[in-house]
Picture 1: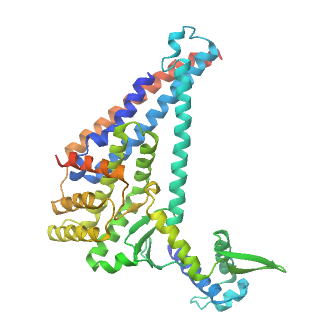
Picture 2: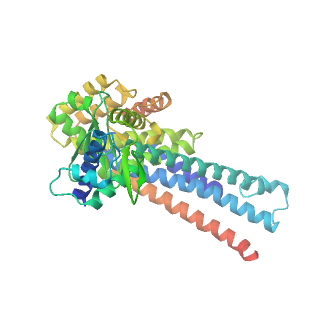
Picture 3: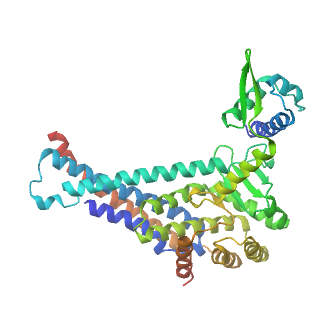
Length: 295
Length: 122
């Protein structure tokens, strides 16, 4: 049962990496579904560990498992101890990552006296006095889009508008939550190779989704923005550089596509996975209740 | 609500500019007298801004009689340089989960990215 729940979780975490070809076709849906899959996967893995630890502890208290061989099973005493330790480590690591992300978000927010501020209705647009090339957004109660003066100077008005719309799309879609989930999954499941691949797939999808929202559907403008993106990236010399920018530019040059069929299949798969995990959890609760009654 | 918040951000900048422009410790009343804003700002708003700045560690305060007087912790240049360093560090922190237009990646993540993009192009 624990193994089944664990398998559900790991399959859900692996799904975005296995379906990464869909990033190009429909990045918005890919980002949404990947966020759900990674969250669901993480919850299943942690629920599996919690179930194993709880049932093992109840076995120990009620002395049901006297056969030493059963101690090594996931719900045996040794298995329960290992699960409890893993779960504790995961909770500590998860909290550390979440707190660090919170501190970074607080530090990244520019105070009123720093840089030039302009309120654009839904957010504060801040231009910071530095020649470094960057643009990012900070969500929360007073959302900000922060752009460096160096980047602002380098861009023409159309591409600058695209950058602002790109960041606005991140704020509107709540992409920071998706990135936080990607970071947590990557940090909590470092030995599961699909975890880092799925996290990366989600990161790429989030950038592509914001590109699609900002670029609109006019082919000539999309081609121009794609060329500018490659030019700006090569001048910024960012470490991700060529690969991600070229991929984003290639997809901007291509006409926007929609893959309703793929989305429907992915959605059905996730619902099935979720229903399966719920069924296993319900079964696990059934197994625990006699012990609770005994206590 | 948004206009009020924007006002607070702009006022924060004006208040800091006044404090940086004076060597002495200033009371909220003195700051208010220096503020040139339309519509006029009330005393309690200045108090709120100064308290917020004090909580953030940007200004220091000391009690003089019944009131507090305020003074910037650092000079304008030093404070700006320190915050810019923090902002640049935060903007480049890969664990920060910030959304970037041009994201930098460390070596392991670049490898993952290459693998992923190869697969998604196939």
